[in-house]
Amino acid sequence: MRLTAIIEREGNGYVSLCPELDIASQGETVEEARDNLREALELFFETASPEEVRRRLHADIFITQIEVPVG
Image (cartoon, rainbow, N blue to C red; front, side):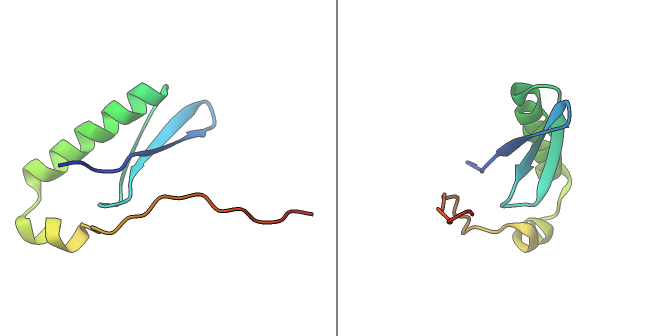
């Protein structure tokens, strides 16, 4: 399954989020945060019931950029 990973710096590390399932993880590097999120997602799919997956899965996620005037 192809899912979205949003990774952002937080303090001295990185936080990773999968918005489709609202599952997050973290790591000291971008790669570690991504890998830890992948592991968290794999564990979720191993343990979650099909009902829980359906309930949590948000299929229509759109990531884009917008411009707003500042100042």
